Amino acid sequence: MTTASRTSDIVVCAGWPGEEHSLREYVLPNQVMIQTLYKQIAAGRQNADDIARGCWEWVCRNIRYPLRWGRFVDKHELHAFGLRRIRSTGEFFQMPYQTMVVRIGDCFDRSALLCSLLRNMTQDVRVVVGSYDQPDSYHAWIEYDHPGDPYLIETTLPEPGPWKLRSQMAQYRGQVEFNDLFVREIVPMDDELFSRCNCSLAHIASIRRCWDA
Image (cartoon, rainbow, N blue to C red):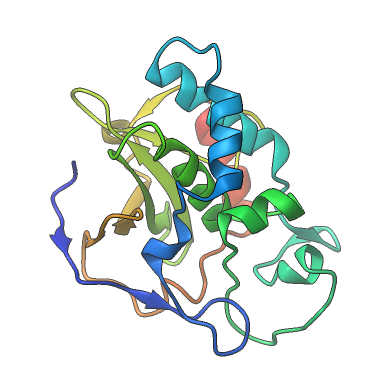
């Protein structure tokens, strides 16, 4: 586990107008859709890493990263929720079951869904939010513990990549980590962290080159 300070909670406003949620509410291992999918993926798999890869594979292959007019956008509810509303500012985080239904999700949505699936297997998995490569490149990913060093799982890939250890991935700099059981601040949190949790096309391309290397 990473060395970090436990916080009582972090509440974000990243949904419908006036809607606020604890970060812990975005990881839902006991939600019925999550449990049903997890059981389908885990059936017949022999060990934890194989199950984890199966969950990772499902998220990569089935959840589309939001594209609009040829570019990535953070206000992907325009697609996901059928233009039912338009927000002029701010992020939009989906609950994992919403991501399963609409099959669209950015790095936060995909990571929250994958963490929810993996929490049915272990407590030692969390969503990490921080930066990739550049200090202002806000991003989210998964860290999954195994003996010796956590695996870092990139959820925006079109296909699962090779297992990579957290210690090998210096480009990823976490600020906050959480699941449904805890929230921890790894370093003092950037005030913009949960209002701009998205990557540009260039950063997505850089991430994929990193995992292909």
